Structure formats: structure tokens, C-alpha cells
Length: 245
Ligand code: PGA
Image (cartoon, rainbow, N blue to C red; front, side, top):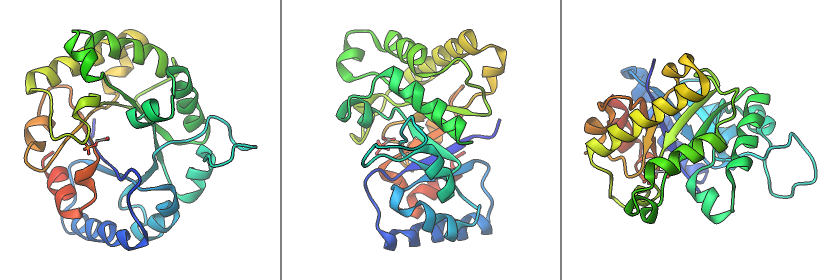
């Protein structure tokens, strides 16, 4: 299983930001990474980014609609992402679940849309701080996996990202033990739900992954890569995380 280090630019990046991708590409060409590298820029930059990176870095969308086309103003179909040069799409990020009211069922439908278009779905789950304090983190992740990971998920079409909501953009992370325990729990749930093939399905950790903590996090058992927000915007920082694999 090759680890995946994925950058989520969120609503950041203008055409000028492509210089960060070019710098990253040059560094990866000079010294290939152990990990597969994915960048998910805003929709507006995917096609240009694809032209710049020429396959050296995988590209993904940050969301997609469940339908392939139609009267859905402002939405993006998985087929459009594929057409622009993406091979991945993030679905069910907590910022979409919380600010756009996305339910588990909606996230599952988006994952299926990703597969229909030939994209790999990066399905995000994770508990809020209140849920963790109440001791419910493991149950919340179980419900989210049951509801948002379609039964046809395989290691080849899906990546799971565990992102505790309270760790996103806060500089706080769970302890190494907590991350390892949650990833072991998630692995067990995935194998129970999808069968033995799910032992090969990559489980990423996300939430305040930085150059300074990446090595510790990325070497924990059942951590098969990282989903990185803020620290993916600067190629130097992102590269240090990639090199930590
Ligand atoms: P962060 O974001 O690395 O800035 O905490 C992670 C994410 O939201 O995917």
C-alpha cells in the first residue's frame, strides 16, 4: 500500500498560486517521494494545474454533486472534475457537512458519483469536540462509515480520511495513542463492512498536520497518509510533510 499525502487548498488560491505547484513538481522530480501526492485546489484552478503538473502530482476536487449534469446552479459534477484533469474528489469534508448541511446519505451519493466518473473518492469522517468529550468519538465514526461509505467501496476506488473536526485548522491534534486507536477502530469497521480487501484501503489522518508533527503521525500503525489543509498551501511546508513518509 503506497501512502497518500493529500493537500486540500479549500477556498484559497488564484492563478498565481500555481507557482507553488510548479515548485512542488520540480522538487518531486529532483527526488521522488515515497508517498503518492495529491493536491485539491479550488475548481477554478484544476484545469490549469493539470496543464502545469502533467501527471507528476495527482489533482482532485473538493466536492462534487451526485448528478452528472442538470439544473444545479453553482454545483460541479464529478464528470466535470474528471474532464478538467482530476483523478480524485474529496467528499463529506466536515466543512461541507457543517456549513452546507451534507448528510451521510448525501456523502455516499457523492462517492458513488465519483466512481461513476472514474474518480477515487476521499470520504471524510470525524467527530466534533462535544462528541469526543462525551466519549462518543468511536460511535460517531462508526455511524458515519455506515452512512457515508457505500457498500461497493474498495481500496481501488476509495480513500477514507479521519479528521477530528476540533483538530481542523486549530493547531490541536489528538495524541498519538488516540490517533492509533481510532485508525485501528476504523480499519476494523471497514473490514467488517467491506470485507478483507479493505485491509488495503488507505486511511488518512487529517487535522493540523504540520511539518513538525508529520513524522510522528505518519508512522503510526494504520495511518496510511495525511489530508493536509493550511500546511499544503506553501510548497516547502507541504514537501516536508510528504518527505516525512
Ligand atoms: P488543516 O485542515 O490541516 O488546516 O487542519 C485539514 C483539512 O481540513 O483537511
